[in-house]
Amino acid sequence: MRIGGIRTGPGTFGTRFAATVVWEDANRPPVEIWWDVGEELAGEARPDPNAFVAAAFAPALRHRERRIAVEGAVCPLLADGLEAVGEMIRSWQPDPGPLPRIEPGGGRQPPAPRVPPASAGYLTGGIDSLHLFYSNRDDFPAAHPARFSHALWIRGLDYPGTEESPWAASQYARLEVPLREIAADIGVRLAPITTNLRRLDDDLAFFAHRYLGGALLSGAHLLARRFSTVALGSSWPGEHLVPWGSHPLLDPSYGSAALTIRHEALGLRRLDKLAGLRERTTALERLVSCSDAPAGAFVNCGRCTKCVRTLVEMEASGTLAHARSFPPVRVTADTIRGLEFDHGTEYFWRTLVAPIRALGRDDLASAIERKIRATIRHRRRVEGLGWTGAIRRFDRNVLGGRLKKIYRRVAGT
Image 1 (tube, helix red, strand yellow):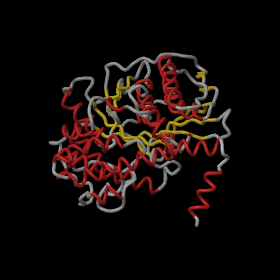
Image 2 (spheres, rainbow, N blue to C red; image 1 turned 90 degrees about the vertical axis):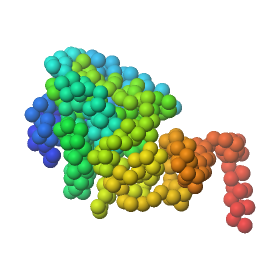
Image 3 (tube, rainbow, N blue to C red; image 1 turned 30 degrees about the horizontal axis):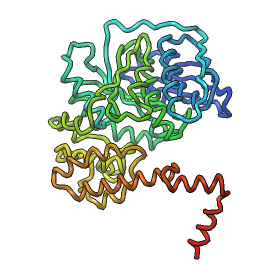
Image 4 (cartoon, rainbow, N blue to C red; image 1 turned 60 degrees about the vertical axis):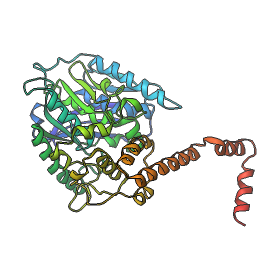
C-alpha cells in the first residue's frame, strides 16, 4: 500500500485533509481518504502522516498488504503501537496475514507534544459517551488540563459511500441539534469532523470488530497541535471484554509521542453509567441510540434492537421518564420476541434480567432469557458447534453429504 499526495483544501463540510491510497497486493482500486474538519478546529489542524497511517493500518492488515509506504515522517511510538494493534487483531482470527511494514519516506520522527496540555473527548450522544463527558466535568476543575474543552463528533462512518450525499447531510443536521444542546450543558464546544474512511473497506463486521477504534481515533492526529490527550468511553466493561474494534488493548496504541489516547470507564456496566447520569436530564432527554436518525419528531426509532435495549436499560436504571428522544412506546415481551439480538450482545441483555425482574417485570425478564437461549442455539447451529454441528461435519467430511440428502427426501414427503 502506498499513501501519497497528502494535501489540504476546501471540503464539503470544512477544510479537507486528504491523501490517495494505492493498494499494491490487494486487487482493489485506489481511493482518496479524507477528513473534513469543521471551522471550530480547522485553523489548528495539520495534514499529519500519522493520521493516514493509523487510518489505513487495519484495512491493510485485513487485505494482506505487505507494507504501508507513506510520504513524510511517522512517530516511532505510533509505529510500535500499530504493531501491537496488528498482533492483537491477528490473535483474534483463525488465518492471520503478516503485519504490514510501515515505511515512512521521512523516517521515524517523534512529534513534540502540545504545551500546555489540553484534552478532548469523543461524543456520539450514546450512553458511553455521555457518561464520559459528565464524569470528566465532575472529576476535573475548569483549569485542569485533563478537563475536556471540545467534544469531537466523527461523522460519515455510518454512511460508507454516501458521506457527502444530501441524505447524509440531513442526518448530520438532525443529530447536530441534540448534540449541541448536550455540549452546551456540559460546557464544551462541539467539533464536527466528517470522514470517508470506510471507503477503505465498507464491510460492517470488519468495521465493528476490527476497525472501529482506528476509524474514530486516527483523525485526532490532525489535531495533535491542539490536543495532547483524547478520550473515548469504553463500549464493553472489563468484566466482559470481547474482540471488538474499540478495545482497551487497541485504542491507546493508536497514540503517538504527541497524542495520548485514553479508553475510559472500563470498570462500569452500562447500567452503572446510566445511574451516574440519573440527574443529567438534558443529556437523557437527548440521548442518541440509533445510528440512523429516522424521519419524524424523534432522533431514535424506538424499534430497532439497539433502541429497545436502551429503553430497557433506562427502565432498569430508573431513567425511563427522561426517554424523550424515543417515541412513547412500552417495551413488552412481544417486543423482545420480535427482535434479533446482535451477534455477541447477549451479555448486555443478560445484565438486565435481574434488575428488570426486581421491578416486577417478570414478563420482560423471561422474554429476554428465552431470546438469549434462542440466540445462542442459533449461533451454535450457524458455527457448527454442539452435537448437531458434529453430525453435519461428519456427514460432509466422511459421508459426502448423504445424510443431508436423505433428510431432505424424508422432509419432502
